[in-house]
Image (cartoon, rainbow, N blue to C red; front, side, top):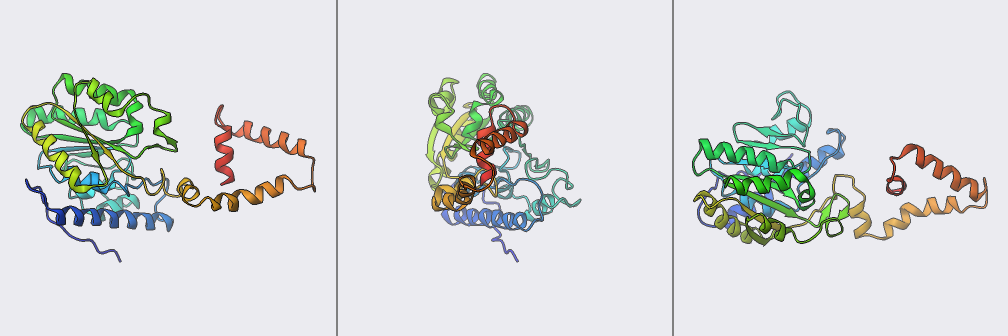
Amino acid sequence: MLRLLVLPGLRRSHLSPFSLYGMMFKLRRVEERIKSLWEGGLISGEMHLGTGEEAVIVGVVDHLRDGDALALDHRSTPPLTARGIDPVLIFKELLGKADGLCAGQGGHMHLMSADHLVASSGIVGSAGPMAAGFALAGQLLRPRSITAAFFGEGALNQGMLLESLNLAVVWKLPLLFVCKDNRWAITSPSQELTGGSILDRALGFGLSCRDVDGLDAEATWRAAAEEIQRIRNGGGPGFIRARCSRLDGHFLGDPAPVLLRNPSEIAKRAGPLMRASLSVRGTGMRQRLNRSTASVSTSCPSGSAGTLTISASM
C-alpha cells in the first residue's frame, strides 16, 4: 500500500530544504505507484512519467499562490501533485474511473483542474498557448498573479511555442516559461534537431533568461524565486532553462534506456534474429531480404521503415 508524505502548502518566501526534498520524495512515490499500475495492466495506453524532473517542479511550484496558473505538457502528474491535487484523484483518472480528476475522460496527458487553474495537453508545445491564455486572464482579472508553463526542449521547435514567447513579450504577460532540458526529443538527441542555443532563442525575443541545474532543487528554487518576483512586479515574462534527466525513456516500456545503460542487452535481443537470418537452412538469402523489404514497405509510412524495423526487432 502506498503511503505518501503529507505536506502542507508551503508557499513561503524563504528556502526550506526539508520541504523541497519532502515534496520531491512524494512526487517520486506517486510516479512509482503509477508505474506499478501501468505495468500491472490497469492503465491503458502509453504512460509518460516525470521521474527525473522533480527538482525542477518543486523549485518552481513552491512559489505559486492562489490565483496563479499552470500550463503543462504530457508529463503532468508531478506538477499536479505538487500543486496540491489529491493523488488519489489522479490515480482514479488514470484508471478511467468516473470519480477521477476529469471523470475518467482525460487519461494521463489531458489532465486539468479548474479549481487549481491547471491544464495539461499531449500536444507538443501547447503549454505555450495555454499559458499565454492563462497569463492574459490573470493580467486582467487577478493583479500580481503569474502563470508557469512547463515543456521540454524539443517543444522549442514547435511554431505555437515560439509564437507564445513572442506574444508574451509583446503583451508583457506575467508568464514564466520553464524549459525542462533533458537533451532528448522523444528518441533523438536534441542537439541534432535544434539550431543554435536554447537561451539565445529566448533572449532573441527579449525574455529575461536564466540557466540552472535542474537536478539541484535549491538552485532551481532560488532562480525561480528571483524570476517570479520580478514578474509579479510587472517586469514582463521570463524564461528558465533547467537541465535535468529523463529516467524512464520517452514512455514506460521504451527499450532505449535499457539498451543504452546495458549494451549487452542489444546482443540478447538482436542475436537470435541475426542467427536466424544467417542460417543456411530455409529459403535463400536474396529471397529473405526481398520479402523483408516488401513487408516493411507495405506496413510502414514513407521514410520510417528503418526506424520501425529496429523497433520491431527489440
